[in-house]
Image (tube, rainbow, N blue to C red; front, side, top):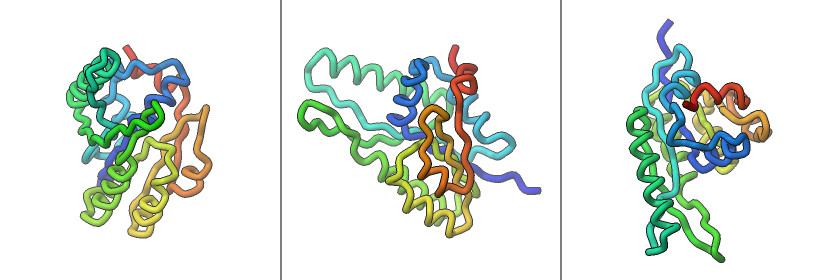
Length: 177
């Protein structure tokens, strides 16, 4: 039997906050390549992507610290053979919101589907904005696996993806030093 080609798509903000809920949020010590291998099993990783809003500096120490930490994370991801895709952060009423990240993920689902780059997507995101892209990929014969978190599963993602797995804290502990 031919080995399935797989693309891993990780919504960085979603991933970070789910890990933070579990008190496991030191991403600079996270073994992303081990995590990717666990996700795909015997499938072949065609690509592993991490999506995040780009931090911009505004002259404040806090923004500079966030910027520097993000740069370290991007270097860490590269070491683990993850590509990264940057959206942006929009400040509204003193709070930051990520913009462009979901569009980048959806775009990569469409590209992977229509250019036949893979057979299977593993989506680490609970964002229901991705449902139209998920449905279209499934219509075109691709399987989309939702990798969510057992403490906060997305029922909509479970219902709409081809398959799903819910990660527990114990599943993730081995990927931290």
